[in-house]
Every structure is written in structure tokens, then in C-alpha cells.
Image 1 (cartoon, rainbow, N blue to C red):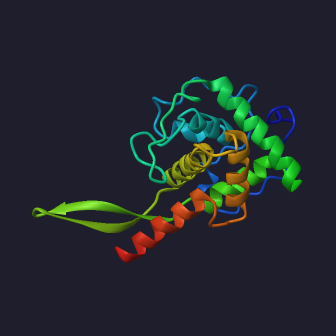
Image 2: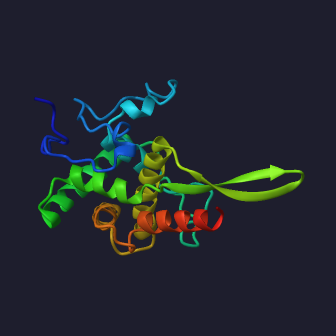
Image 3: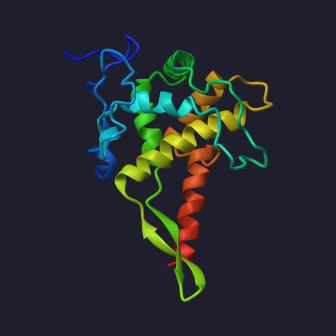
Length: 201
């Protein structure tokens, strides 16, 4: 019998329908959700990090960096480097998800990732002084990375200057993405990436 996430939710009946990302989606709950970056020096090492801890790590970024999100630059020190604060944000968001959906929040997170992971994107090619874009398939590891990044970014975008706090926004973003709703920032970004890639084939 393994550990439970936040002492409440196990992974017994969690279903991963997307075979592409299944091997990179680590569901087993560790004793402590803090690997301390031990995986960083190994190629594909993050595939061995719990998906919930990876979400916590994305929450620590507090925004997308230099890129604008919804026309605004969101880059505060709100949760940057504060693992315990990010841990509490995800734990409280999971409690809200469980109350609203009556589902295991880990399953909601898995569904959200599957719906927010783009299958295709574009890359820039320079040939003879001419730059153009071509469509490429996304690797399973990158699909998972993009989904987690956009789920966290969507939550921060909704919380920035909004009335709701980050906990409510993260819970709402995960629920919308799990339902494949285009109101979700992550799902909208995925569809946009795939639409641009389709035009670049």
C-alpha cells in the first residue's frame, strides 16, 4: 500500500487514457513531495518525479517569465522559491476540486493534463537566409511539460488583479481543463498551437 497525496487521496483507480504520456506520468505518491532537484542532472529524470510535485514546482514560478500573458507581464515574487507555500496552494485547490466534483482530484489533474497536452506544434527553420515555420509532432515529455506550464500559467493569469485568489483559480483551471472546456487557458492554448501547426504543414 503506497502513500496518499496530502494524506487523503490515493491513486488506486486513477485512469490514464492517453498512451503517449502514460510512461512519463508518474502517479505514485512519495513520502514527501520534495525531491530537491535530484533529477535535474539526469536526462528524462523528471519522468521519475511525481506529477503532483511537478505541478507544485510550476506554481513556484508565479508567472510565465518575460512573456506576456493576456496582455500583461505577470512576474511577481508571490510564490517563487517558496515550496511550502506552493504545496499549500495545490493542497487547498485539491480540497476544493474534491468538494465541487466529488472526484479524486488526482484523476481531475490527470484528465486536465491529457486535455491540455498539444499533439503538434511549430518549429522555426532557417534555410538559405529564409526563415519559415514547419509543423512537428510534440514528444510525450514535452507535451506533459507544456500542459503543466499552461495549467499553472492560466491559474496565475486568472488570479492576477482578479477577485479570486490563486487557490480558487487553480481549482477552476483544473476542473475546466479536465472537462475539455475552452474557457480553460491551457486547453485554449493547446487548440491554438495545434491550429497554427495545421496551417504550417
